[in-house]
Amino acid sequence: MKFQFLRLLIFCGMLLCGVAAAQNAATQNAAARGEVRVLTIDGAINPLTARYLERGLREAKDAGDAVVVVRLDTPGGLETSMRKMTSAMLASPVPVVVYVGPAGARAASAGMFLTVAAHVAAMAPNTNIGAAHPVASGGGKMDDVMSAKVTNDAAALARSLAQTRGRNAKWAEKAVRDSVSITAEEALKLNVIDIVAADLPQLLSRIDGRVVQTSSGKITLQTARVPLRERPMSWPEQILMALADPNIAYILFTLGSIGLIAELYNPGSIFPGVTGAICLVLAFATFGSLPINWAGVILILIAMGLLAAELSAPGVGFFAFSGIAAFVLGSLLLFTPMTPTFPGLPAFGVNPYLIAGTTIALAVFFLVVMRAVMKTRFAPVTTGIEGLVGQTGLTISALSPLATGTVRIGGEVWSAQAQSETIAAGEVVEVVSVQGVTLLVKRRQNESNSLLS
Picture 1 (cartoon, helix red, strand yellow):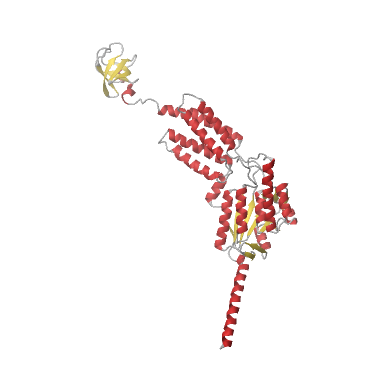
Picture 2 (cartoon, rainbow, N blue to C red; picture 1 turned 45 degrees about the vertical axis):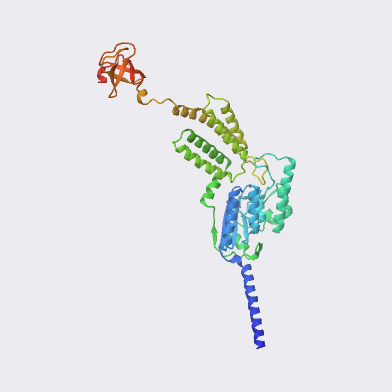
């Protein structure tokens, strides 16, 4: 009996060991399940691309995908977005492969950090990586103290990412401090990347069997025969990405502000208000993807208020000049943050020629078009009895300055008096003015009575 119990314990122990081994094998081969999810980042690194990558990694985890491949071609972008993306990659239980491609693509500035942070870093032939020295978003020059602080912070991040992935930390730091840039072949020799592959199928073939360390442990990649699935940005993301241009955002914001003001001063027209609201919504959605300076936004809104106030002023004056000055200043500051952004694009702001053209158009709109609309809106009403002034009619009875008679105008009969002379019945007269309900008329010279009879 005791031996049977002992055999049962041994059997249970072996069974538990087998289950543990199977679980470990399942973890080791987790990359063999699912599909290869391909994300494409083509353009500046901004909050949109950060959300796109984070969503892609989250969905890949939920779907049990084998690998996430990020096809990358970027000139750089925003530090906050880049840090979110590298953090998401470091924390991902699904292996992330950054592939700089196709030929002619680059991983500059923020793109260098993303490539170095990947579990597997790969590049296509005729691509380049590097040039990660921080610059101000407006393209200007930072002061020495700020430049040193930002550069040291960026260099430390680059070195840390490279060391975590077992890559060339010295070169990563040099790319930040000296803005060096190298080709794919040079990057492979310097241990900056792992593989040079002409296309995705070749890349997946070459990484098959590679062991990578993820947040959930070591995983052996099995990608040779795994389905490959493109997962592009959603339509809303693609639209916002296309609008994520300083010039487009600037135009949308300006048109939106003008539209709402036009609707406010001419209520009921609907079209300006609806169009303005749509433009403003798109503008503020786009601002979330750009290094916006809210001081510039406030200045432009103040400018719109001053120009609107000028509409009720008699002539061009203080409000008009102040509004135009505030608009120009706000336009120049709109995409120039007070603090530097790393890594930044080499030139980032509204085109000066666009600012000049928009300012002229804005001045013309408010000082000419809107002023004409306001004059029309508040002009005296000329309908009803006052609208008879200038019209012609036919006398029914004789009129004089002292005697009231009747005239027919437009099929209606009115009481009337002659302005300065006696007018016989049947003559053509013209209304000069209205006094209460009596018309003051004068004889219309050289008119044929038959035309009005």
